[in-house]
Image (cartoon, rainbow, N blue to C red; front, top):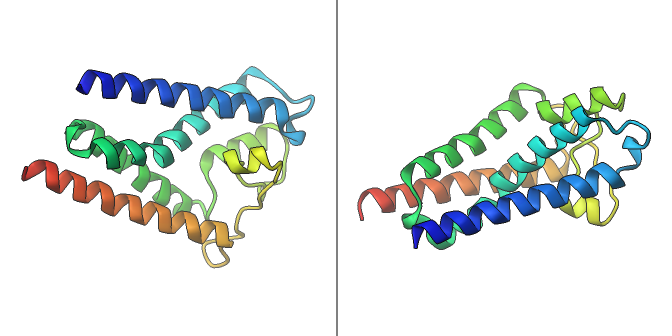
Amino acid sequence: MVHDITLNYTLVLIVLTMAFTLLEFNGNKNYKNKQTTVLFILLVIHYFIWVFSFLSIIFVLYYGTKMSMTFLLVYLSTIIFIKIQWYVLENRCFLTSMVNDLVKQDDTAGFRDPIDIIFQRYPIAGESNKSKTSRDIIMDGIIITYVFIVLYTIHKKRFK
């Protein structure tokens, strides 16, 4: 059972990461004539982290106590790290900033999540921690909710 969960999870993680990466790499108007191996690798890493961070919660909710404590702790650490690095870098992601620098794009260009890719939207990152966009506030709420869900799952697993 645990092996099936891990295999299914890994397959979903890889497929979604590659799908989003390829759609972004080939479809983003700001990457025309700037497509390099480095850009592709940065996008793979970024979408892997995005899929891991924001879609793994489905597996945590469904399989929670069957997942390893190591996975839950790595997941918890990752989502906390994301929030901390956004805060420290004035509401910017270091990977998005690296991509923006690589393609010589304004640093206010935000990360395009799958919804932005599908609807061909180009988000703008908040100016700083003091002037967040509504998208930034929603992401903060999602991360805080995920932290509580994972902590509750860890608690349930420990005292099961």
